[in-house]
Length: 438
Image 1 (cartoon, rainbow, N blue to C red):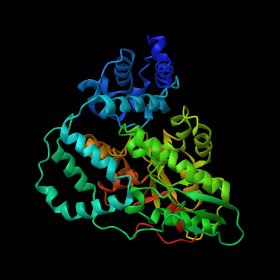
Image 2 (image 1 turned 30 degrees about the vertical axis):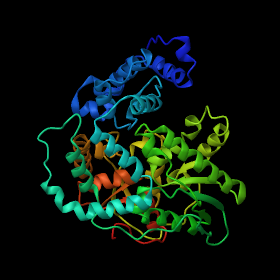
Image 3 (image 1 turned 135 degrees about the vertical axis):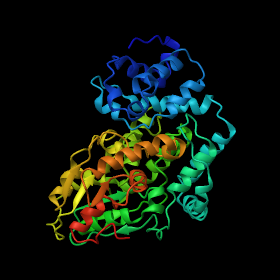
Image 4 (image 1 turned 180 degrees about the vertical axis):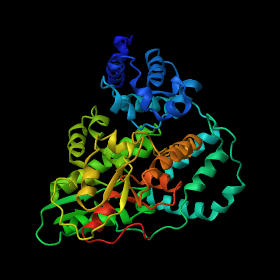
């Protein structure tokens, strides 16, 4: 794609990066076939190619974001399926992230939307606040039926529609909190390694059992696990809302405490059980590339970050203790398959540990969770969820496995089949409790 940025514009590292990405695009349109919003809506501007044109026009002419640009960028899930499909290696993720930052800084949204986004950015990264919000939402959930449902999907859903979506996502009950930061879980038997385990934000409130399963599994196999004190949200939630100042501040804070731990008692890896977080942490090196104080440290942390299944594939697990003929539908989270290019390891681990693993048709298409997308764009998100659940049903599973809490909550909202984390099944297979019973 031909670009016409001026030398002055190209002096900006972000514009220089955008220029490189734009020039890699050859207009082939392969991305349209795997883009969830284009598949649903059939609008060229709701495809990666269409959004690339909009972003190019905005950046190249240095224009403020228009309502049309914002509408189509907001509809993007950042599922990154286009990056898997693209034969030219267009790094769409970094381009759309840059567009979101510009929109956040220069576009004035309606007051109610600004307030909602501010609340999400404030509450979701803070487990204490998030827990209280879930308690309040649970109390208000019966009122959701009184809120109007739209007859057709809206480009910008109303505040009431989004509140209805939030209430629908609230769980019926909340589990007790998991262990606190600063906790160390010694290896059972001879120590084979030492890792930090990301505590997460929403996950530690909604499903602390996931990290508990990871701790049980790892310590059982000789791996010492530490929950690093003063760790913060990874920054993914605010990063995808275009609030990069907040996201980068969180990234820097995490880099400081993780490096301190690595330089103290040592770390073989920083393990992540929420793939949406893992994709962003692995991108810290890029996000802070221009920060002279943090660039090298960020690159080191990104290299240490691993998805839990990525790490488990590198150690030998104990022989299977719980023989099972359960059929598992494996949902490959977008952030795992497209963002981190991890596609085979989770399924191989499950198969080797006694489960019958079935691929889901249209596995490349997003389930509609995408961070806060199922709140901000609930109508499109629900259509994607229903399509995903229908595809899962075709393999007649006993359980559904996934590696991302957002996907798990989203899919569970449309099916009665238990949805569990991959690591919960692996913990069960090697001596832990059976998942899906709590």
